[in-house]
Structure formats: structure tokens, C-alpha cells
Length: 185
Ligand code: NI
Image (cartoon, rainbow, N blue to C red; front, side, top):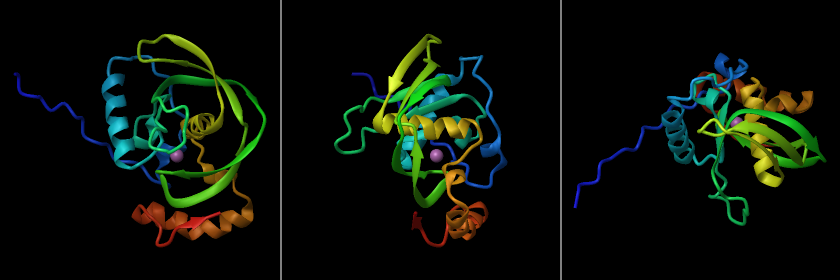
């Protein structure tokens, strides 16, 4: 028997609220050569942080690339991991309110209203194009991650009153990486 070779790629650092890279719109992926390695590192990072979605610019790569994996959540039906590249929303329907959190905005959770279903166009690792409809939690995670790729964060949707409530915490995150206390809005 051959010895097992360790191939695990190290996890990457998650950029936090206040980092200018998170506010910059990403570029489309045109050179796919290093994407499989980056995707593997992103999955390692996301799993280590117990996240269910991650956008490439959250780990410092300003590219239209996002991953998601909701398999850690009980009762989830659509549990296969997704790797979405050069994604574009081409349609949406309905409206639903769900609680969201974000690895770049730790310990702050809030109910956010978004379309219930989306139709997206994206490429896979082999550069093939797909058009697919998503609904439920997966649709929600994709919309949250696509906002990241546009330089938007879920807290941007909060009312001015709720923004006031988290102002100090956001400042603490940008200074120390986490707030002194958590909050659910
Ligand atoms: Ni996020």
C-alpha cells in the first residue's frame, strides 16, 4: 500500500467588515487555471468557519466566484456543494424573509427580505455554461454571496434605526475582527 499523501490546502483568512476589498465589485474569471486550487482552499476555509457560503472576495480574491454547502444544516434537502463562476441573476420571483449572518460580519444576524426564487446563469470549473432555478435556502445563500461579489453586505439592507443599533459593533469588527457583543435583529 502506498502511503497517503496529505493534499489538504490551508485555510485562508476571512476579510472582515471595513476591509475595502469587500466593497469593490469583482472581475469575471477569464483564466480558470488556478481556480480549482482556490476553490479547494475556499471550501476548507468555509468548513473551518462553519459557514454555508463564501464569496472569493471574502478571502481577498476579487473574482466572480462563490461556493456554498448547506449539508451541515439538518433538514436541508438540497445538500450538494455548489461552485458558481461568473454568475449572473437573470430572473427572480416572490419574496421571503430569512435570518442571515456573514463570516465577514461576525456575531450580527438579521432578518432580510429577498426574492424567494432566482434564475441564474453561471459557469462550472470546466467553463461550461448553465442556467438553473434555485429556491429556498440555496437561493438565499446565492443571493447573499452575489451581493458580496457586487461589494454589498447584508447589513446594508437594514433600516437606519437598525443601522444605529449595530454601528458600534461594526466599528469593533473593523478594528478587532469581532464585536464585543453579538446581536440578532
Ligand atoms: Ni457573507
